[in-house]
Amino acid sequence: MDIKTRQVIAFHVGDRSRDSAEALWAKMQLLYREQATFHTARVSRLVCDTLSFSKKLASHIGAIKYFIFHYNLTRAAAFPV
Image 1: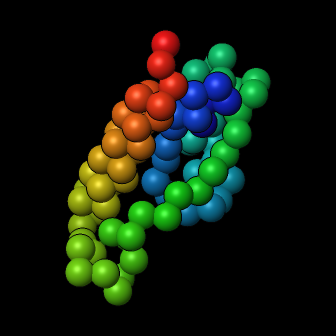
Image 2: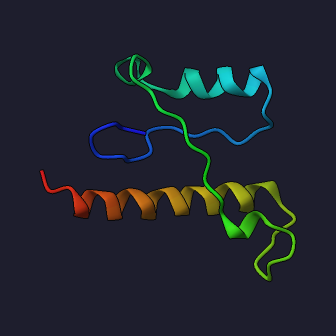
């Protein structure tokens, strides 16, 4: 997340292994690596008990991208340039 705007700058879908952490780190711009903060987000679509659960990984990733896009738009509106 960007410290100033709190917008998501990179994400990676994977387990909690070192390889996944390195994949996320590689997706980040150098500028953000120095002061990076990490958060996990709960997306209800990823929980089996919800009606919107999908069995396909591509659908999960799409849902996460949509969530991040919407979140970043709301953050941009809250933080005028």
